[in-house]
Length: 79
Image 1: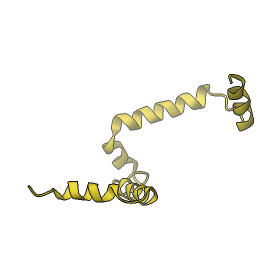
Image 2: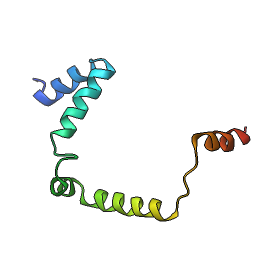
Image 3: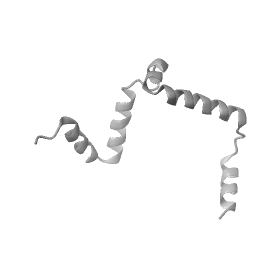
């Protein structure tokens, strides 16, 4: 049986070095409209967009940011 074009492409893709796979993945993702048109983004994953907006609002209203130094101090304390 002949391998489908998608299966062959996937097999070839996984042979690429990680940095080239990353570049190709980002290029494919960007071709879907990510970051360029909010209307397209909402069509791709409307629930995800809604959740991201909700979480962003939660962060803005309830999170007290800390410095990297403070984070490291707090996380090292448990060791």
